[in-house]
Length: 439
Image 1 (cartoon, rainbow, N blue to C red):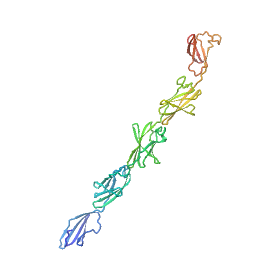
Image 2: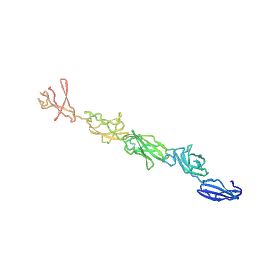
Image 3: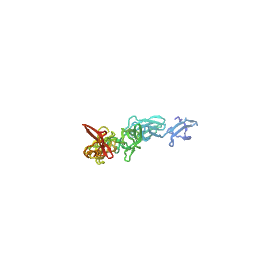
Image 4: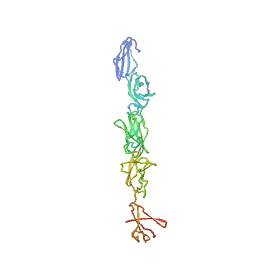
């Protein structure tokens, strides 16, 4: 514009990167126009027009600065609330947030997750950085984010990012392995000091599976193991002492979701004792385990968690079950006659955890006793032998047929309607009796 009609020469000087190029224009249809002979590369250009008329006057325009910008790009797309494994574009947030990094001349950034059917505008947070946080919940699954940017020159660029929303994770379970549930099945009582536990409801994308063990005031966290069959299990590294343990499973998946199992309480009991075995109808000397009763009765004292007591007197060939009376006390009376003799009672006790112990008691049944005899010692039979007539005032009497297991032998003496009882004496030659005072 502004070129006189008598202009005879019009020259455009183009400056780019310090290089000048002059182009002489040709008038066409009364108009002066300029178009580069070849495409200009992106960059800054300065154009100056010089006009000379027929009279030789020369005039020069003010310089015109022009920028060629034919492209734009998207430098980076970031899922801001990527959870779990970093940079795996996996999140447990139903409303994902994205950050778009672009050249500073970008002035429009739009996003779509439905293949371009609907678009939302991102917000510029700083030079070259745009952000958008979805305002509505997105369903679990794999999604494709499409980002479209436009710069001030009108150039556009599009880039996609695949991301996954995962907000679900099963609640894990933990149970004592049946093989180690040594007591009643399902009572979570075991006599195994390194028991195995089975873990269920573990998702295939589980990243961390740990077991927290609480025992008294001590807490530790150990890692579960996935077997070759894909199943998860846990066995403690060290032997557990007797006591109560509470186990809780924690599972975290790749999206960062975390779930806890209900706590499982397990009792380890590896010890059992038989406190006492008693022959209830012990007769004669107390505690000598001898009885004259052919139906011996036994009392067994055990810890209160014992739930089975069996007895045998034939070396374990046959067993009978004792009956529980008070807590920790069991009894049994033999219903059949037991012959005289020495026996070994075997007592087998089993507790709720499945521990078993056997203890012995030697006892004797003795129901026989010889009929004793008494006669005047022949040395003191001063009259005719055998007439039981003597002039001794402290005569000696010989006692015979006294069993070797006799512990007490007494002699009753009647005189004048009065009966007195005396202890006999056992000597080297047998039992005898001599009055302690003259008769």
